[in-house]
View 1 (cartoon, rainbow, N blue to C red):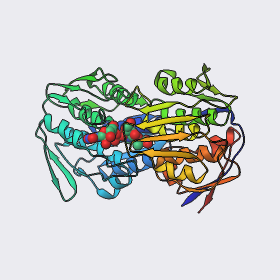
View 2 (view 1 turned 45 degrees about the horizontal axis):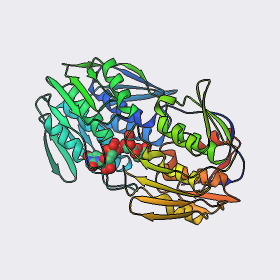
View 3 (view 1 turned 30 degrees about the vertical axis):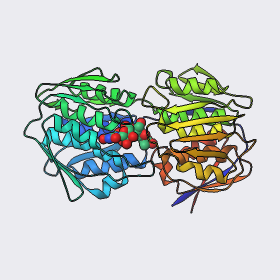
View 4 (view 1 turned 60 degrees about the horizontal axis):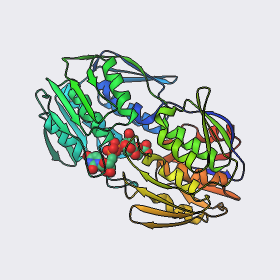
Length: 420
Ligand code: EPZ
């Protein structure tokens, strides 16, 4: 297991390039199970979660090969439709093979994902959507066992107590692509990753309209062919570097960051006093003064993303006054709070809300990563704290950020990887 040793203090300056979106790549790779013939997905980041997905697709009979930033996928053997617990346990997103397997192979057995550090994470909406398309779904031995002769288009409502579901929308969309007739998903997730998946499905010959809005209409087709597709840039990696620039009073151009995907983040950064501008092929974030506090509520897209809540909390720990952060997507996603307290932050948690009172400085300390984005928040805290911070269990970070230490080094940050 590796850890990061971080010397805090400097302003981050320069240019950094973000990679392709992890959360686009995962369902898009799963969608390749629907195709006849080879697919090539480009811009796929080199992350642990991607390697897990490649291993899962291989278990499911696909030949999967990485070629630079592209991944080639072709299914040769459809006999095995079982996504086993040891892989699903490592990565919840494995659940998005359920829709493609069911639609293409008429059956699927997928281990039920458990909870994780950010909450309980049920999949009831995925199952409800697939049942509406006519799937028979049972639970057996911790697995979801699903079958259907041929799925039938239907009206599906995917709203839940915390908004829609991103991977649930992906699952139903993929299944509906090969269903007989028309499916209408109401209260679909609007995340750009859902629209990206629809673009890939359409390149494969599917007929998906409205993705990126709450109403997606899918006219089922008889078969899909392999296709080539380039995934969108990772908006959460983009946002992480944008927040890093602001909190360090830096001046960073985040290349590939897309303004149209980052509106809520840009709005919040401007509100707290950072300057954000489009700059050739990306977004530039600069700040030269103590930042203002803010009230932030995480929401489904286009609201402020839960995946940047922890990083923004690090920033607000150093703002001039009281901020209120309310988590409306994963109400228990606050594992970073206790670690930030170890670094001298002043945060009080009340249910799904954290009240953050800005302090003059954070102080380096040994801290523990608990999940992907919480870990990123701790790295940001380490970069601006006085003295040395060690972040243990950085395998969490490696799930979602490619070479984050190298990218921070490019900006003048001192983050070294060492064996624990
Ligand atoms: C996706 O997870 C992302 N993962 C998450 O990113 C992200 O935090 C999340 O969407 C929200 O934006 C991938 O894309 C691989 P949801 P997903 O289903 O789809 C509740 C990261 O750090 N819900 O949209 O699993 C759920 O509990 C990760 O990269 C139900 O109640 O999230 C939550 O409160 C972590 N029933 C809310 O909906 C269901 O059947 C949104 O979850 C499904 C979800």
